[in-house]
Image 1 (spheres, protein in one colour):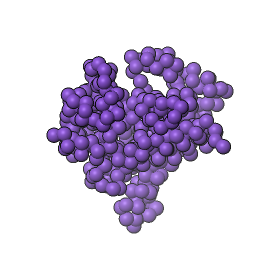
Image 2: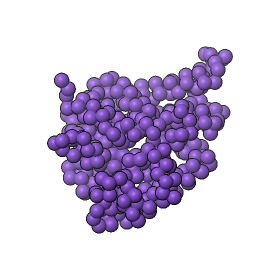
Image 3: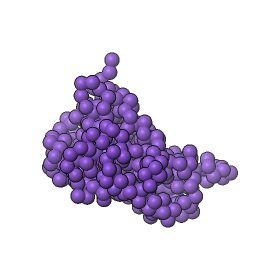
Image 4: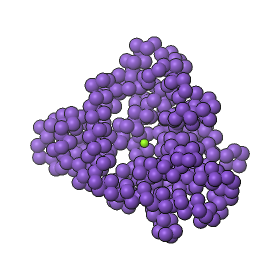
Length: 347
Ligand code: MG
């Protein structure tokens, strides 16, 4: 009853890695509060934004859904702090990239089907999952890695999910940051994307309480950048005379992009969040703790692979490189709370 990309999407939703996204950090560690975004709710927000744009641009909606739902499957526990720590641990063993890990999850690590390892997804979905990749790793990926070496673009659906990802986190992190009391409304007003909509909403609804005011501003921000993305991309496709998927892929720059004006405002907000939220001393203090946990887990399993479940222990049998990769797979698959419990158990 389903097309290929619908099947991809369903296999992703039924995967173990997808369910674990529920307990993985986006910015705030999972136990900090029930209202913050997790990797799962982030992935759902990315999906909905991307579907809207896909429908407006007549792109393939199920493909966009599949890529969006899978885009963060390879993320470690504890967000970027976890990824940095694991990458550092893996320095002598080929490194760790969450994008590449997402591909590894769907290609190899999910073990559910009798006939094949992984989820056996289509080439197009896998192309979209691999958002970026170093030249060294690209060389090992065959046809999937070629575009990174030849500086070509992925299909339009993959380009779209990339932007939808950025739209989702820019906006939900404003919401989460305000909720956590780490961001300040007056400070945010210096950002044109936030400030202009804020002024409009306050002018139209002077008595609105804070929570509704914030939500109303954010929904307008999302509407604003999504509309700009649709209009600008439709124009780009028209001007470039794109007729086939290969036309889109052969270009040296993406076609699914914001106008210059919105790009600048969007990037400004992203930098604002980096300085004021992602590098906030409270977030940093948490990152220090979780980074240490990941490093200690890594050394502990490397020293004795029987500390992992039997399946991983068996897989880790081989040279040091092999052992390190299996340990990294095991740690990357952990949820925040499982990693914390496991760290406690082992220390
Ligand atoms: Mg993401």
